[in-house]
Length: 298
Image 1: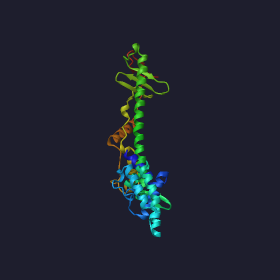
Image 2: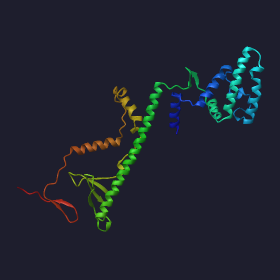
Image 3: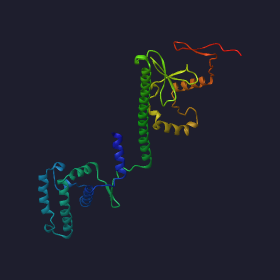
Image 4: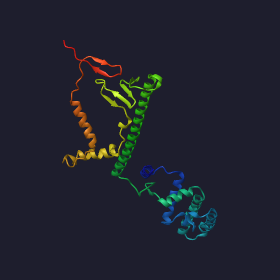
């Protein structure tokens, strides 16, 4: 929610151009009022001691009273008549604003500040984001979005794996007598060019080159994304490593976990070892176990 508020504040502060008709009227009347009475509010101009809490009856009472005071015919002197004429005209405008629903909008500006009038436009001048701020803000916004996408993607991947496991188990149960799996069964699903072995202790992916090489199918293998997996951390670390990190190995930052390094080393070592394929005639025993006989000599 705070992020959303910051986005709205930034957009509002940068643009601040699409004022409504009511806003334009409030801003214009206030701007003209400040020309004659700097720092004065609508409530002070109408002599409303209760300010924003003034009732409709009190506003009407002061309107009638000030209408007599500001009437040009009651004022002498050329300069005084001009000021009285301006006050008389803005009195009606201010009273209409305070008596209508636009009063809340005026109170908002009064509390949070009025935009400045510049180049025939009302613009907020209290906050002007520079290039660095915009770049950092966009980076944070994109980084948070990327992290959320990673979380959603991981959640969807886990659901797909769980659904696949249930599909494979269901198919194996239907192929078993009585609809209950009592022994291991090899299963192949339409649309998947892989074979699976279903056992009581789980579902396993069968290696095409070595059927004895089984890999458990589990949603636990899908890791929960961490903040350092997102570009919020990855991009700054990358920029650091290609700049200051190149000066010394001690300055370089490595985000790889020690466990991940061990797994990669083990996989590399295992890939270097040649898998010895069993020789001889392949025999399948009644219990499903596979053995190999002695190789025939030529």
